[in-house]
Amino acid sequence: MSNIKINDHITLATRKNTKFLQAVIKDPTGEWRRVSTKTNDIDQATAFAVDQLNKWQVLKDHGVDIKKDTGRTFEKVALKFVEITKQKFEDGLVSISLSTYRYPIGKYLVPFFGDMNITKITENTIDDYCTWLQNQFGKVVPKSTLNKHVIAFNAVMKFAAREGWVNKTEIPEFSTKGKGRKSNRRGHFEKEEFDKILQFLKDWHKSSDQYITQYKRKVLYRYFYFLGASGIRPGTEALGICWSDLQFVAKKCPEELLVDGFDDDGNPIKTEYIFIDRDFNEHPFGIYHVYKRKGKKRALDQEGEIRAQYSVVRQDVYFFLEGLKDLRANKVEDDDLVFCMPDGSPIKDFTEMFRDVLEILDMRYGADKRLRTLYSLRHSWATWKLREGKLGYEQLKLQMDTSVAMLEQHYDHVEADDFAEELLV
Image 1: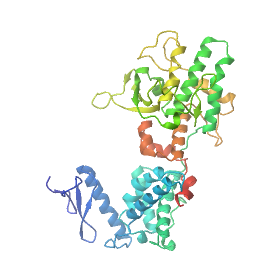
Image 2: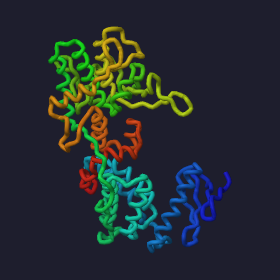
Image 3: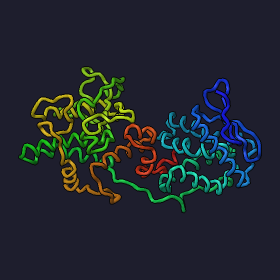
Image 4: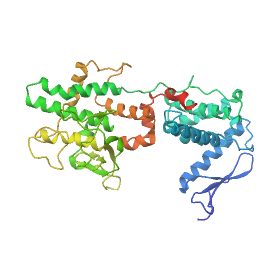
């Protein structure tokens, strides 16, 4: 591909031994610079070059020498910080991985501050970052989401100070004071609360003499657990799942799971609120893809083809669901609903039933005074995963079929402050 002139200041070019497009940019001082766009898409490369030129202009407007020595740029320091902290996690010196914090560093902080010398970043530059961040989100950033950026930025800069690359007095103040908006937090359950409800639901059917009431309570027991173990949306999405939508995918069995079994009543022993498989000698270990539907059909993409959108659940969750087949009054077919009435027809009143459960247990509202519903199980699952620190928003968006922006808006109650000190060990 020949060079592509975008305008008088930007030209896209190719280079040997790399698949990425290079941006040749005339900076605000009139000097031509060549930088990698880290993409081979022309539109994305153009957007990258325009952003880079705009950042240089911001720096120049604030009196920063953009011809400076770039040996101690924010990007290089941030990458070193991530590398060292990751190693400390693997060595057991910190108890949480960097996945949650790598996202604001890689997605926002490095793209904006990347080429800046760490000694030249000022409070004015930070104000520009907050304005830029708001433009990226398309609205005022929630205060607790911004707090994650504050924690990550300060962690990188304090790391640089410990390494002697910048004086502590040179680190600009970056806080949420006077910035951001109150977050749109949603109610969720703590794991202990989830377990309490699960144990109640297990025996709730015994308190009724009516067959249909008993049946629906038994189904709710498994429906409740499925939602808490998957993060799938309750209602249409979950209730529309058929047995044929559950597809087994073989995986290597973790050795630590082989020691678990069943209690004297035949109930699976739980480890960290997840049921363990029946018999690994009889059943190959794996996971299940849970494909989504739109109405009675699988969801379609823009071209009309079946959209391979699915969430993932552990194999033991599937085995737990299989108990629903034993409750049915007729033969269960592959295209039958998983959660249904005895005759296979849709079940409709789980929302009211679960509200009654929360009223009985005095758990309708959480400690934060927020109302809880079946939908709170989706938020609970996301909250637990984020707290574990093993998954970030990029991974959660695939499981939950949503956007990173939506996750940041609704799950920012998993405060970065909880782990800030460990990140700085």
